[in-house]
Length: 619
Image 1 (cartoon, rainbow, N blue to C red):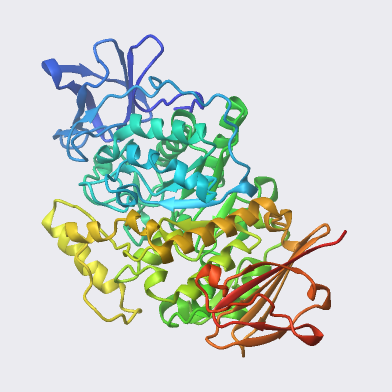
Image 2 (cartoon, rainbow, N blue to C red):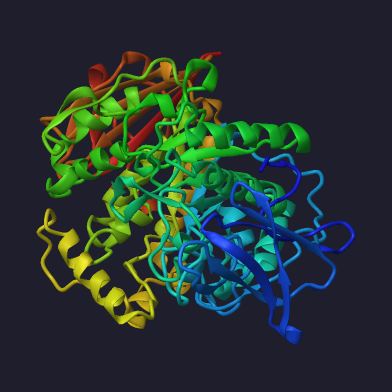
């Protein structure tokens, strides 16, 4: 089957005449029929070859519920299964599929041209815990708040249909179906349209490295998985073994659907290091190729951002440079180094990091490990970056993983002081990279973000419980692991919006707004040329100095991660520079009543746990 970038060709779709076109890849089947529950209609599909079955009919209506009846090629057994490319599972993964017309929505964003990659200020959120209602419609009520904060792009954690109504989203089992309890596909389209009307881009997190456990019937249809490789979640998705052509098409079609039919601006590809593919053209490069073709057709830019635990620039290099063409990647190492600066216990993967020295290296090189020996991995790791723009890297002081994968799901606000929270935020927004904040971080939310599920299979529930406890073998955290299945774990993880009216939280919110505004007001903050960066660490003092420049503008950001006052020598040219930000001032609930830090001979005093940003522009 050839992919048509202008319309979805797999699953059940309605054409311009209103007829239903059904195409299913089921090479294990001797016969395939579609069963429509209303009227108990049964229609047989025809063998197209290469494992595909097809039917066009005017006997299927919008919102009909349906299943496939599959007669096995090997033993003649009959199976009844939902559509693996279903767009809507009203009854969840184990129920029937519901027909849905992707083209029925009336879009009003014809003039939307997206947000330039360099201008992204990303706000990561989980639909179920971002608001009390926990759905797409409720997110719309918060858009004005996000705009006032200064956000330019909302990143939504995965929405592909999972079991139950509580899940991070990485257990999705219907990649094309939008979670029913969030509002389904039409509600997502409405949210995207509303975001574009207000100038907000939408990033959607998608999972192409595994499929969740409950309601996963892919193996009944064909060779979706391979025994050649194992992932942390079991068998790898089959991107390079026998039968892989249809599997590759399945996920390419999925990426195109989000861009074309839901008007998503950016896809964030989860854990691409767990994708195993030794094909001549890697599946990521294939997705990028089709994405570019779609962009040429629609006239809109689309981006792909990879979550990547490999310091391998091949992923973010253009394909003309023998790369995979990803537009950007997450950089966990920036986070890890920053955490160690703040006093995070050096255990597990944090044991590889040396605080300010490594944070300074990340400011300079993006990657901390560029070929040196990694004690945690027990091998050399990473590679040096060549001339790659800072716009290729997303950094953060918190995200869903780094909060939620702690045993108790503590946010930074529970781990460090109020003063240190301000330093961490400054470290992100002064960086020459794309900044991301995790929902609630901007007001120092104290509610945790814990791991939660709502499976129905008791054996699976118990396995998840045991797995969570085993996961913390490297992190000797005291306390009892929260029960992932408990409703209370989910409820604890919801944001408390009332805190935004409380004095300390209001101050932190104002502080974040100020930092974000710098990125938009001063070109030197928005300049992501990594050649215009100089960072130096002072390990004995647990301090760091970051200098950035663009044309006549320069900033000098000084970080004191220690709990004592520190004195640093600065370049004399900054002796009469303006103070853009001093986190130690009482304005920001700090202990300092004065703003004059500079002493004789360009010596500068820094308050404990503070950041000072100096700015100068030559006439």
